Length: 150
Image 1 (cartoon, rainbow, N blue to C red):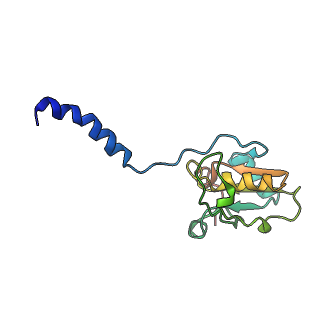
Image 2 (image 1 turned 90 degrees about the horizontal axis):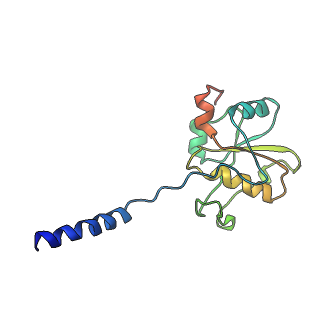
Image 3 (image 1 turned 90 degrees about the vertical axis):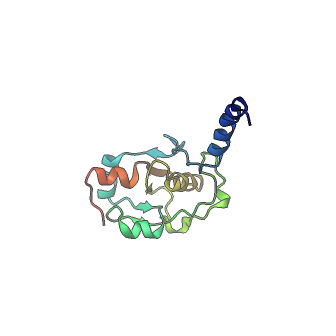
């Protein structure tokens, strides 16, 4: 192969190799219609006032460390990590939430590329819960503030 022809193939080869790289999930949206986005300080106040917190991560993550007093309620996702995900592909046990749909609830996970709490918040709001709080910063934000864990 001539040197000139070889140089023409390099960009194509690099493009192909890049397409084989694993795709990274996008960051969760900064807002969620009908759901109140909260930061660690407000989350702590809600926790102190008795509002139930739901850790939507897998059981092993919950067992390793979670927000003190939080309950494990894994959001089992098979749907795409996008704002227009198909909740029918996922599993989330709404029966574990308070029977009173006017009662406040808080969902969290690992922030950033963790979509579990976003999806749980969306599904709860669509199911009629009126005071859904999404702690988007989740465990990383909570622990960075030195707030209580178990």
